[in-house]
Image (tube, rainbow over all chains, first blue to last red; front, side, top):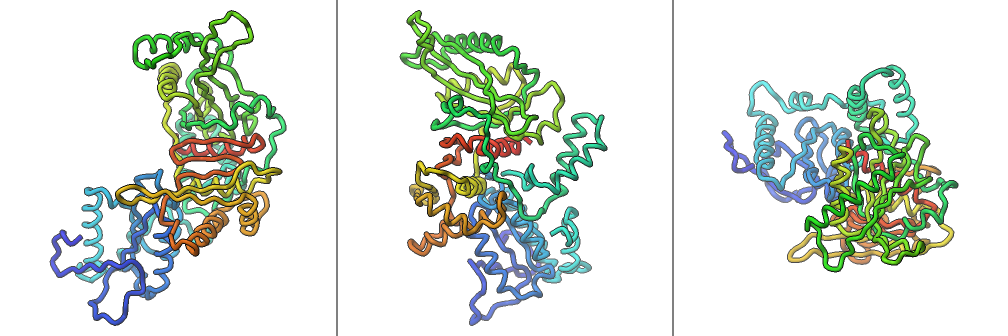
Length: 146
Length: 346
């Protein structure tokens, strides 16, 4: 992502889990991407635990789930629907990307940078909440079915 | 991976029958599109409800007749429907296949030192290997070496065995026309060269396609839960799990063996609804094992890959190898494998 050209300054912070240590002065966080490795149930459990520590305000378009490893179906120990349900519960978009593959990684980086620009408010006319409603999948069933 | 919709779940059955009534007289292609659309529209679904076929006792499967299917390691393949296959022509197929194999071997494609070139192929039907009445009859192919002695008793050594079956494969039957026979599961035991020759002949003769059936960790944990849930009078083997940890320079293999009665006790404490297994129960069962291991060894097994599961009912490896140990639950094991095969085909 850092290789992408961006008009303003972009910083990426990586963390294994939340909450982040509170004694550090850090700039405003515009987008939180939860990466789930479909090969490892541990990563899903980690993400589920971390979600509790995130302020509710972020879920209005500033959170995104990224599932990696769907390409190698024989290695998957999590069903795709499990992460779909998780993303649906938290009303956030879910992206699938095989981070091991260079081409997919580059296009996903572009996508994330674009999302970041919108969430930071740098794109006039589109807000994070607008983006969220645009990204909502058309197949989502009504709430009663879940 | 397998579909989230189990063939046995009742809410879907009523929807299916309703749609079927509207679609009598549509072409197979329309039926297929409809089935694909049904699958997509039901996602995301409520927790999967799957009826463990393990609890059914197949009365009409003669234990003696299927004894040779047990305790052997089978390599799994999924097979697309066979075009214009007929159960009355089995002798004809035996003849053609023998000729084909002889020709292939003489071509030098599969020459092994000391191999007997006098071989005989036998096609036979396997009675009782089916889940529902609509399932086509399973059949068996065997390559035997022709005995040198003229006596009737020496049938010759079995060099290779393969069988085709379909257990509860109804969802596939809906989408194909009458000329096709749907036997989506193929199991082979023997040398890889023989398997390759048989596959080539079937592909050429019946316009079908074989692909190796791998079983991923998700399905292996389902199998572990379902087979532990099976009631057994006598446990023949310990329940074992094998994990592979990818790390350099060599991957690490972890094996975890539990006494089968302890595993059953754990399952019983997790299991709520009788006769059905749901996703949460499987997850809870596996999580209990993971946390127990973590407490003792501080290793997160959930971050590794489950590669093999072995119980008293059957043992399965992620590369698509299965060994069935108990004839009582043979149909149950095959039903799950058929579902995986059908999912791979679709």
